[in-house]
Image 1: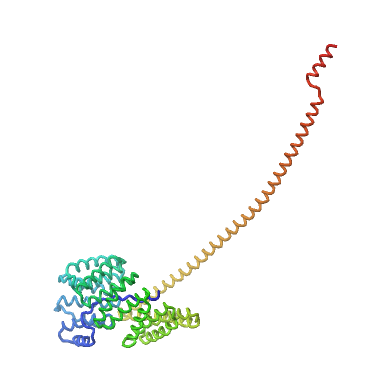
Image 2: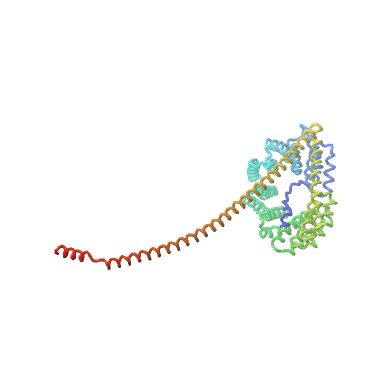
Length: 487
């Protein structure tokens, strides 16, 4: 279903300071401090704050903090800086670059016996190994995270709750869903014991999202409802709207369509009032998808068009591409093939454009990172890879054609063999019919011959009896011969 395409939001609380603009301005001012430790700490914290907002700016502050390090700086602060640089690279999904920074932070924290810091870095390392597809190390470090958490973290602390959620997230990735749910339930039990809205909102949203992922909508419904209540108490509109999205999905899947529509509409209205163009586009898209599931294309299409315009204003080509595709499908459902073709064409053009932009961006990044000489090497490598991809595509195409020919030939051969068998069967049946007819004729002739033979034998026997009746008997002949001898 379309609604299942909506991203499930796992809320991870990693910020260490307020989101307010006033506090942000204060931190920016602190990055200019003449006190080196204050400057480094502020740059590192600002990088962590910006990593999910503007990762490029976050990386600038993170690397500025790292460049400002001196041997006189405390080891714990060095570890914090390295850890935060890794966090920024992780937010950019550049896991290969993130790993050495986490390794450096972990080595320091291990040497300093900072088990709390070790736990935080290990959790992030596990996510890195997940991103790299390294399941062996993912398993290895997740066991260490469990051990440290049980050893040093109190079960009524915020860190314990967050760690249990993160462990649930990790095991979900490993497809150990039973283990994943076990940790989510631990987090819920701990949060309900503490009874703080911040922790309750966090665990209910994450556990509810897990249940949605398992298609357990009935179980998710009360969990997400309680999570929304806690979120509203915290008075954080963006998080409230995220909670409403998950609950709207559940309502739609459990047949509570009016409640789902109300929530989707409320989210869209709120985003139109004070959200960014990107958020407006996403909210409009979600509401439109709901109408698509109800086959109300007359209401869905205007919303998709508004969502498309918002994506265009937000300079979000991927969102635009998605809107073009779904608009094409909607018009096709209405049998408006002209409009469907128009948006399908725009979808194809945008897809090609995004591919070209990403290729250019990759080349620019190579230029900045490696210089002209290495850039040319990488370009050649990229061209080689593209050539190999094209060769593979051509090979796949030829193999497909060959397989088609082979398949067609096999089908033709089978048809010929079946035709031959059928013709042979008909001929054999015809020959059998002729043979059966001849056998019947022969049998009839045999019957006639037997009747004739019987008649002849009967005639012979009859003549023989007549002859025998006319001829004198042996006794009579002897008598006459005796009489002749006497005379």
